[in-house]
Image 1 (cartoon, one colour):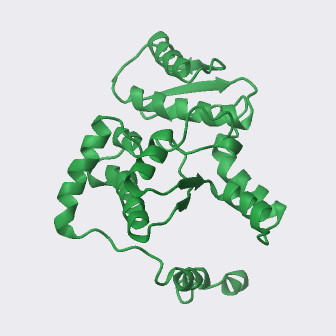
Image 2: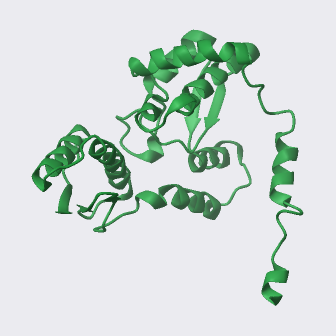
Image 3: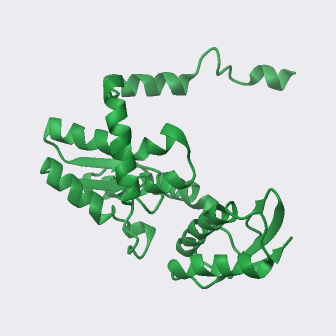
Length: 238
């Protein structure tokens, strides 16, 4: 009981929320008006059918209006840049391939999808830059001497990479069957690619009520081939 009494009462006083509220005061864009939403959803749907980034990957796993979130955010970013006639630096934790250039060799060199850069430039006449949080802090420290420690940047990077740091470990299950997928000694960049493969593999499994191990293995191998990744295999299937 004594330990419980010493814990902060975040309901009565949430200092983090209060600090964020103060920092973001007057810095949050206005939402679209209700009468604009229908047209916006129709435009989002058109983009998704043509696989125009960003956001079309969300259509594979989200339903209703939730799947339009990324496309709406992108529209708001463009509208803000047009209004302010300003370049944009977008800092995000988003890691889906409909945001980033898939040809980038490593996460440390990640660049926005080229189609995003071209669309932004054509509609605003300005430049668009996109960074993960750790890379943004890295360049802020290097270019303008921002007071952020190397340890802080590394901690953020580890937090970002954690879900993909999988080496020779089971990686997934499905409600009506169990399976084990193994990755053979891969680094963090390849582990992220493997995680993307697993996301797509799980999505494909939802389409089929029953599969043999051979059929499931073929699906996994075909997806892996799309990502040019051959160090992943289906070990067990039940």
